[in-house]
Length: 89
Image 1 (tube, rainbow, N blue to C red):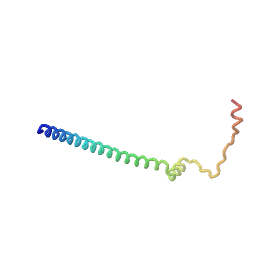
Image 2: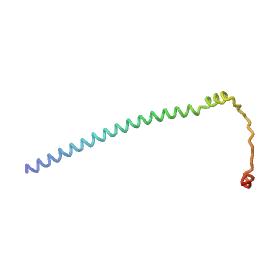
Image 3: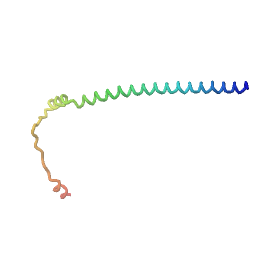
Image 4: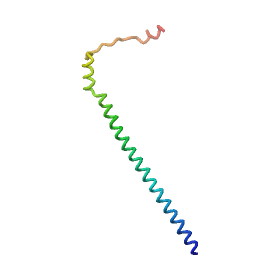
């Protein structure tokens, strides 16, 4: 009877230790994932800032003025018939 009691006590203690170890391991992995997520959020914000800076309309207008190009409000385009190009092959 006492042997069964000690066996159950030992099994319960061993189970509690294993459960505790698993909980601690999960908490450490969760903390690592949260840190990785925070790093990715910062990198994403920096990427967005660079993207918005590249696509800024004011900056594009300044670059246009510096390059000595002329902004044409009514551009005229050359029209080519698609059939004529295909038949000359």
